[in-house]
Length: 52
Image 1 (spheres, rainbow, N blue to C red):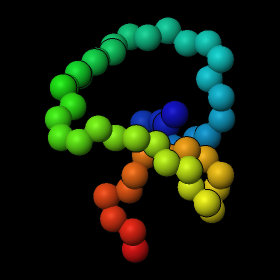
Image 2: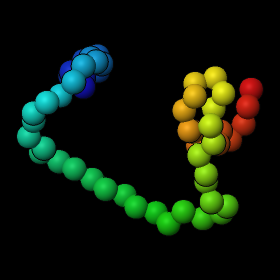
Image 3: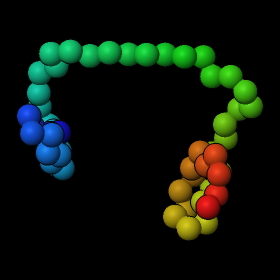
């Protein structure tokens, strides 16, 4: 969330009214992405485009 001065605020939003929404879908192309276990975090993550 942010304000008119473009300051960002963290937290949880439990209730609100949506005044505008947009959805954009594309067909994935290329090799299938498969989540792999990350040894640093223990999470299954999408492969990074590069390591560095």
